[in-house]
Image (cartoon, rainbow, N blue to C red):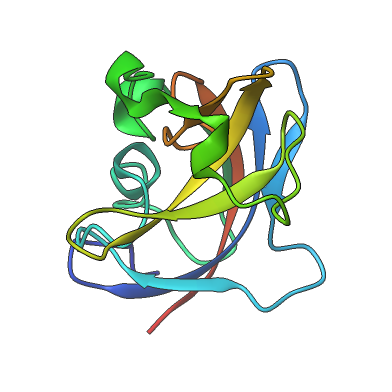
Length: 142
């Protein structure tokens, strides 16, 4: 039976959880995830676990945050004056918004604190700083 190697296009079913067991993503009920191994299309720690797998094989992969979405970067949190945010934009902790950088790039941010005079926005990925666990099943090597 053939084994996955770098450069192969594969299809996997997966469930991603935090170390406390909370599921953050899954292919359940959807088509399998298709990607090219070693191409950087998925997080590094999961990508690195693929070589050597055979179709039908299942395994659990522990991915430390440095091989997933990285550490939380404090510089990615910013206080914005409340007056700079249009009144029609809903502001409550946990809500996701989109900001535009001076060069026109759109980036998602999360509202982490709302005060009378300022709003704290966080542009870190929601899974930054978290170790992840993936239950993976190799469905196909193309």
